[in-house]
Length: 217
Image (cartoon, rainbow, N blue to C red; front, side, top):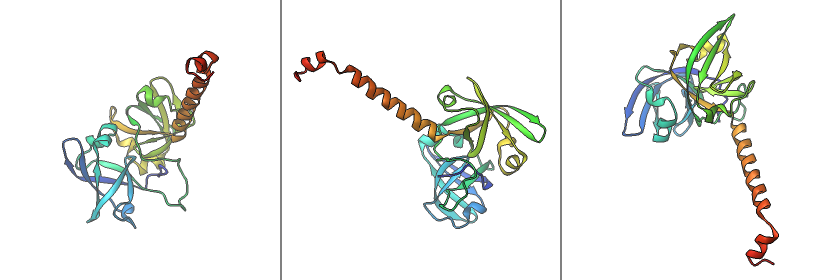
């Protein structure tokens, strides 16, 4: 698990592409402190397992499903990425619960400066927007942010100077794809409500006629 508070910006040193998967090597510093093989690091919000550490870099495998769901497939040598180590029991929960399992991608469609902050507009699909609520949380490329506006086509967040300095978000061009992870609580609530609805329907289907037809009475 992660908090969505980016620890540092790293850079892609090498990408070895397979047919559907890839192996990436990331240059980093802070996130390598006390990191061991098998530990998890979020790269642009994607939870990856460290398979090698050498020369100020770590290597991770990126499976086909991750390539389909995220923007890691579009990264190349020199690309800057947001990095965060998995949280420890004593870690301050400065952001929100982030699993590192990306729901899909969106596209940055606009930037708008307002005093010391910058509004960022992200367009995405209905299957993601249904989980996005005003004043709720969302992770964009692994950055924990508060939703300030949402409609049927997009959502907006307001980025403070500290976030702009410590992450890659405001350095992206209009049209760039970003990884999105919705608040996990919303997905659990949807699943629970769906399950309860199925149970209710099953109970409604039980009648005296049904019991008689199946030999119970």
